Length: 225
Image 1 (cartoon, helix red, strand yellow):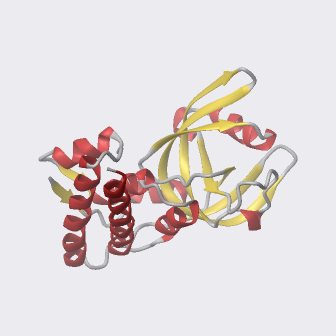
Image 2 (spheres, helix red, strand yellow):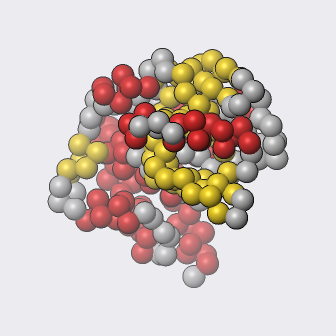
């Protein structure tokens, strides 16, 4: 597998920088760019934010998804929500037995700069928070270690998104930033630890943290065998 080290995805950054978008706080999970994930909705403001975005054209169906610090808070205030989240595109919305199910695709990580609350739903002004790739030589050193740990964890029974496994076996170039985020999403870490990954600005720093978590999970998997 060959890796691609993009400096920045300028189009994505331009799309989200300075935007005011509906905000959806989520419990017990952390979103990542490049990952598709489902959410089940119950809170009125979150449903309103979702439907406001989904009623627009596909390219404009954008929301900010950010993790809550404590899952037990039913009406989170800005201080209850992590200050780094992900701009996501709403892919599907389905109502089932009185609940709303939706799927999202993460587009870009952002900082939540200013909260705007109206009666219907929360909104937030964003600023771009791109991944920094400062030392390409260091990245290439640590990525090989991370990918070897992914293979070990998979062979021990850990589940990964099929897209991750396909990229590992592909001879084509892959976006290393996106691959690292997809692996991060699959980790069995706590919300706080996954949020730390999301907030890590440098790619080599994020890869090192992912490798540390994978090493821990491999030890647990070995003990369970």
